[in-house]
Image (tube, rainbow, N blue to C red; front, top):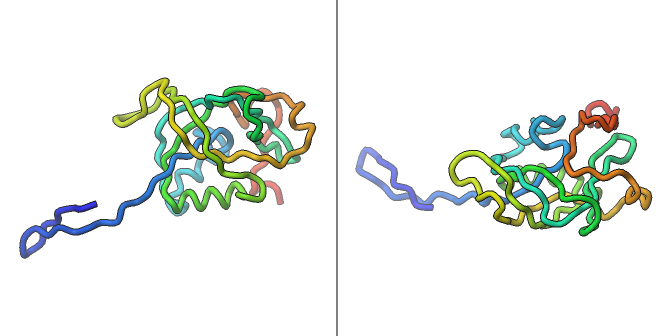
Amino acid sequence: MRKLLPTALGIVSVLLPTVQMMHIFVYGTLKKGQPNHYKMLDVTNGKAEFLCHARTVEKYPLVIAGEYNIPFLLNVPGKGQRIQGEIYSVDDQMLKFLDWFESCPQMYQRTCILLEMEHGVGAGTPKVRSTTEAFVYSTTTYESEWLQKLTFDNYDAYGDHGLRYVTREARN
């Protein structure tokens, strides 16, 4: 990107590096109001800008499982429910942080899925009901009985399901 900058000797044209931004769909503890959302706001992790609320076009099983009651989106398209979440535009630094935070590729994998926009904020927000692709963290490694668990369309760590999420800090 070229930018004109004023100097003592006149105006100089400089070439500024372009920051590559990626779209990430979050459906669990990283959403607004959830226990790990603060990690999306921490600039030391990188840049994350909220774009809009969205829902998966395909159905997926979203379950709460394991001893820490972690939300897992099982990579089994066509089963479960259309999942509600949020789309963020993130820089490479935040993407690397999220890969680490989500234990990718050991626990989760980052794949691209199709999403339908619901509502967002500000100018440049994608049009309601339009579709876009974004990365999502899902898992193909899970216990077979997880497919029999109750599925959710919208995860809430504080929901009436009674399965309280145990933060990393509280696990020790």
